Image 1 (cartoon, rainbow, N blue to C red):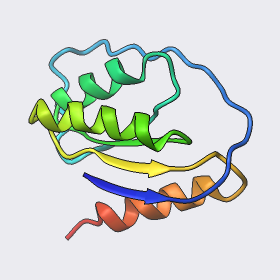
Image 2: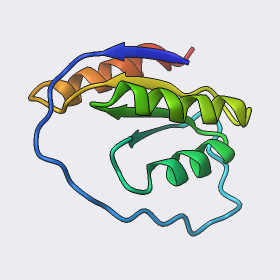
Image 3: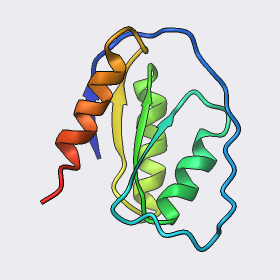
Length: 105
């Protein structure tokens, strides 16, 4: 697991995520999952099971760490954690974090 702390929080949003193609392969892809979403654990688990690297983001580092441990224990991929409260500039910081961790050849 990789962890980084930075950023500040702004207003939250909710969304419904639907995975239609059960045969979808996400190896080599990165999925960013907000830990405070009600369905975060299910989404993160589903994406990791399909081969994605899951970046867990949110203000609660403990919750993100617990979810990362579940993903690691499932041996479905390499989760990463970015602790942020969503302030201005945090989106760029998350993008930079992902770019540094998962830079291609």
